[in-house]
Image 1: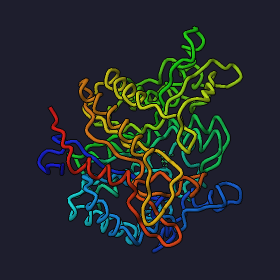
Image 2: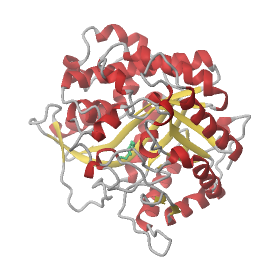
Image 3: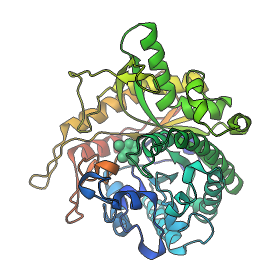
Image 4: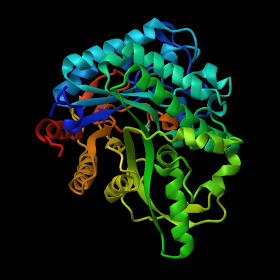
Length: 449
Ligand code: IFM
């Protein structure tokens, strides 16, 4: 069902999601600056087979074709991200008009196709120039991000109602600053704590900037989630699962934004690594978002593990069904996460901003038969609809991803798309799962109470 322009909340959005660095290619075209993923992926040894986002899906040149594809599939919404250094090559200061013009054309195409844009401001491509100044470890990062948000809102905000500030700030902090498997490739627990806290401050700065420029805008944040259950009912495993949940799921960011404090289960472990005097920021962080975006892929069992700094480990579960990412398939966890977000915060709107799976796809005779992905999507959509029936105000579902794309450190070795991309020619082929999802989007309209 197409959204009603008069009342964006009166419909349920069936959409698909992407991120700039993963699909656009041409990262330095027309005056754009380097981002941290450009530098990270060009550094030998950091990504599968040395893959980079230099070409990716060439969406930078094929965006009009991609919008037509979504329109023809019947999708009502598209979640994409803006690449900060396309617009501000050094991250602050000098504006690159050609970068703005690209997103302007994309928004025009979407508007003409009747597809609702859901814009994410930050999906991991920090301007490299800002990393040289300390990146998310620098307290000034909140101001840099707020200024960028204000610029985008002013220049592009006339066609955008729904803004996501940050995508998965937990993954930025953990994979980028603790594990070092993602850009900027840091392994420092203090940098991790600073990245968590400063991204929260940046989200709030952007929230105010967007509201100042576009008072009607709906502003939220998209958060990483993996459902966890204790491996046993022992006290140790139960409390390990509570810490795991607080650490990598929505509470790490929503507790500060809604209640002005870090989750109680976590704060004793986390506080030594947060910036000194972080307590003084907490009241200012209490700015409940208009919506929360739930990114959900997997769930697992947790046991107590004193050998880990955070005190938990994952059970092996050899029999559990998995995707090509080796992630366990647990649709019931999506229902559990949505239900708990609603119970704990009572925010007006939730979206599933990412949901999907990588499988080993093959193109044969011009078709991609991917029944596992269709089954995965079907079971997760059912979990969402059950949550809605229970009264959880979920307003949309975005498949990750529209296109096969650059899967970060895993490069092009994993395919998440509902549309197959031939990376030699750039050709797009709608997979069977894409046909199934398009049919759902065209025919399944859901009224909001
Ligand atoms: O590809 C990523 C995306 O950029 C963020 N969320 C998880 C996806 C699959 O790993």
